[in-house]
Length: 210
Image (cartoon, rainbow, N blue to C red; front, side, top):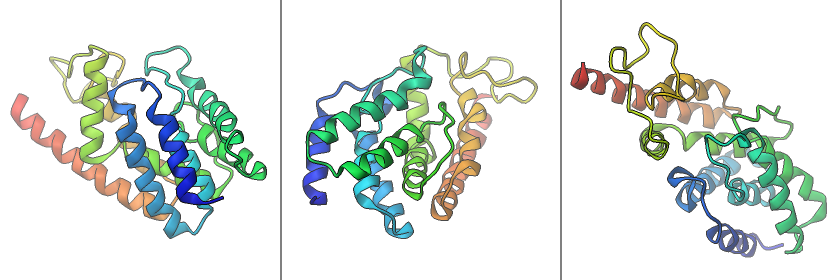
């Protein structure tokens, strides 16, 4: 199967889907694909698996505040397999794509079993970090009508963070934890670089609002 043709088919498929929110649109998918290409080249793993999974990892839209959120990656994996089967995708690789998509989710917390799944998970998590991570966090917070921060303790200095209530709390409940979850060396290095950028943003924000 030609990789360019497969990518064209996957791109067309997800371009017609409705995103769960502005942070999980086609632009997010394309950034994840870019990250996957970079990591796949370094790790020398199967690009037929990693690219198919990257393009299709959010092909089923489940909102961040939906009770089905923990099942979102499994639902996407099932839909991806159905779609790929109609395109003559190698049948012996479908299970690997399924696992890579299902296991990419932070919420699902599924153990990684393949290098390809590790690459896809790292690529997706990188897009939650750095300058784009800040933008996406604020987009989702606005979409869910959450205030930017707690009035008395914006940076969780004396309280437990609650990202169900405050947007900035998401940095502390999840985003700053991501670098230590990365499975590849290249992914981990880039994740720490991006997390440092996010910390500098919060340091500047602290100076401006406190």
